[in-house]
Length: 203
Image: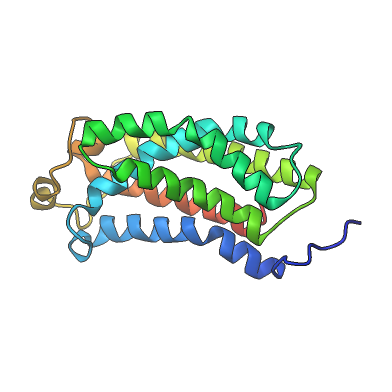
């Protein structure tokens, strides 16, 4: 049995801290779906960007896990993950140009930061860490695909997202998420809520 890391938090606290970013995101998507007037103007656009950028994070996750597997130490491993994530700044930059906003770059940093948080608040031995990260990647990918399919097919209620709210959101582009943003908010709730549940279980 491996010794506990001297800076490790108690298991329950570590899991809550690790899941905090996803719980925050899921709560925000829920509020946007139920009572969008409570949110700051322009936040809906950021929520749309969050799910687009999260796809990049999921895509990069497998490469990141394999790339940092042999690196010891949370500091060095964190720097390595940041190095791998730098490549995806190019794609986030494309989103930034398309939306005429720097928000995709900040969103990418926040989403990668939520992954790094797990390394710091709940460190694991090398083999266990690889297994946890691989499990998180698989769960994230499955939840993303499941969420897209579910919210695209089911007749979801609009709740607080009426026609007047849709017009006021002024989301750029076209497509189901833009024309029926309540589906976007439902997807964000399902996806980030599901990832949080996996984190709370310990990966």
